[in-house]
Length: 102
Image 1 (cartoon, one colour):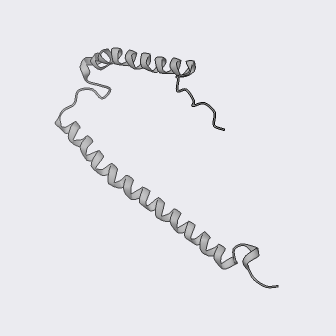
Image 2 (cartoon, rainbow, N blue to C red; image 1 turned 60 degrees about the vertical axis):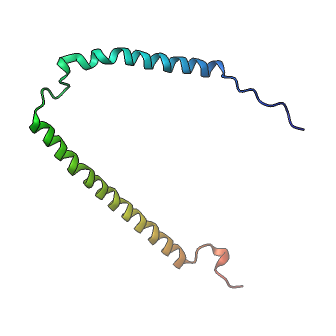
Image 3 (cartoon, rainbow, N blue to C red; image 1 turned 90 degrees about the vertical axis):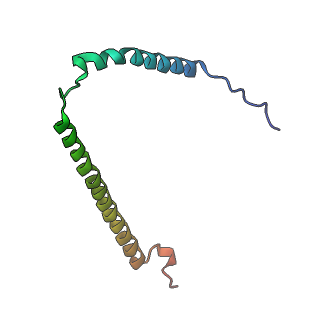
């Protein structure tokens, strides 16, 4: 016997969470222009020129390929370790139940 279909009502706790998130988002949107206008919009670094922007671009150009290289090397080493462990377990005979013998 199947019971009645569940009602899909928002629980009071979920409603309170939703209202809190909406209020927080609205507050952040209201305060953002004042935060961006601080220090004439120059940000933390200060005034920028073409040289600063170009150097930041070069840093990004160097960072991403280096990051991909390092993560690929890490994955290669981890795969190598995994394969070595699998080979060692296979050479050892794996589970004792499957080694054979009487």
